[in-house]
Length: 379
Image (cartoon, rainbow, N blue to C red; front, side, top):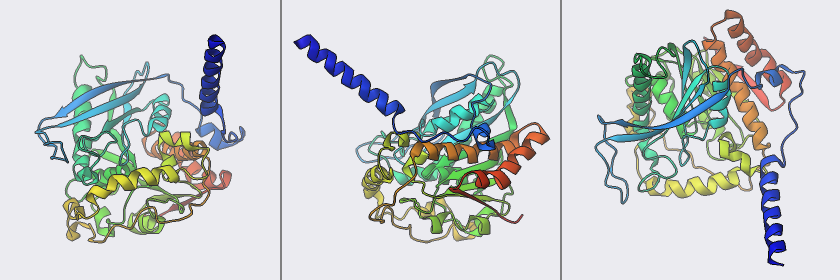
């Protein structure tokens, strides 16, 4: 009898795991579309490893019961294509508040299969398990973490004993990130005084931008894409996404209808049985923000002369009830279809490939996918 009960429990656990892995998936994209082709895995098998990097030149501030540190420790995951013979573009992914370095793994794996090297860090105080609890205002230190990581790759590229020796294409370094990571990427790419000039293109996925005025973007002329959703419960579309074509010359605004904020991150796929994954995301993030909700730290990003606007942050998660959102797996497909061709349009070695990627983004993407609209700013 006990053996039968144990077998029944095992069966139920296996069934639940299979359903979680394979259940409630969206219909695949039509195979005769360009979108389906751009979503295909690349020629390379993908591998990854984790390494802890230490920046001994900058401190980590005290946070709650955490006393702080004289250094910044950065747990880093690096995805790379196996058997890569030539130098490759480098992308740095930045996670959102209370997330982790694996938050964009679906993007990292896709890029690595197509010959890119992708790295992502657990930022010292904004990741989910940060000592003292996640602290949103440490975002002001994160752009320098990106520069430190680029420095590491440049040193490995010059080291004949390193696996990345002569494997980094220093002219094709890009940044991308979700939410607070999108804001981090924007700061690293455009800040009038503190940007990293090695960054050649940037993507913000539902990143806060309400504090950045037109002047903020004027010091650099590099490709920029914002992906935003009108039903995003955390990052208001009107305040953070809609004005990007007006503020950033040559930029792309990809508007994704019916996309939740939470589903842009890899774990969002596990909430695909909910009508809107922000039901979970809002509950988690609003609790994490309570420790700094009364602190005015935005001025630490820069001054009004640099285009940093002294405006209050729009309130998060005020919509009740939440509207129905698209399946998170489909949302992650569409995010890949925006981000991958964007970088290919600027980083691909072949002029024909670059043109094909740009044509797909500007002409085909929205025509094939009803949830998508693409707006290009004047140059």
